[in-house]
Image (tube, rainbow, N blue to C red; front, side, top):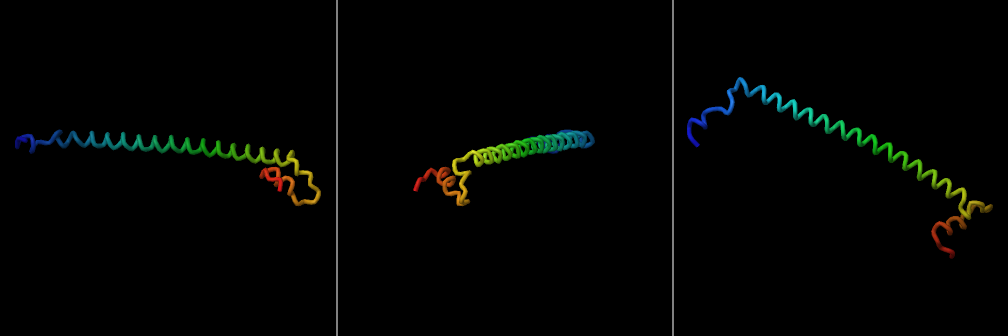
Length: 89
């Protein structure tokens, strides 16, 4: 590398500051955009998980209401437990 190129800055220092500031601003905007997108996705996922949990609870309540052992008068629930587990012993 020649001594002239090694000693000369790529840009005069008075002009380089503007480009460095612009690069930092672009970087910060990109990071903030990424964080905002991830926050929106996390909220959507939480909403979907809440809806899924409500659907599962409703399905379980529906299955418990209409299970064959739901009418057991002795309160043991053995018939319903056997039906759910698949064992008849």
